[in-house]
Amino acid sequence: MKTTVVRTTLEGLIATSHAHRTKRGSSVFSTAAATSEPAAAEPQQETAAN
Image (cartoon, rainbow, N blue to C red; front, side, top):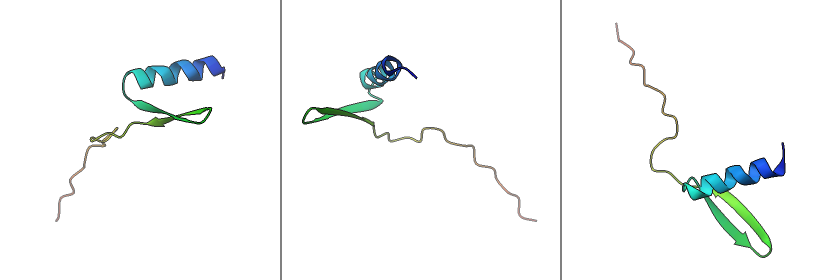
């Protein structure tokens, strides 16, 4: 995978507030943004008691 693809994807996530950028010294780190709702909630299946 090319570095430019990863960088472009991270920049897109940062622009849409799905990730945050943190700078420590000369290094830059990207972390996922905290969300208040689950990313992929699976539907709950009810079980009938017999």
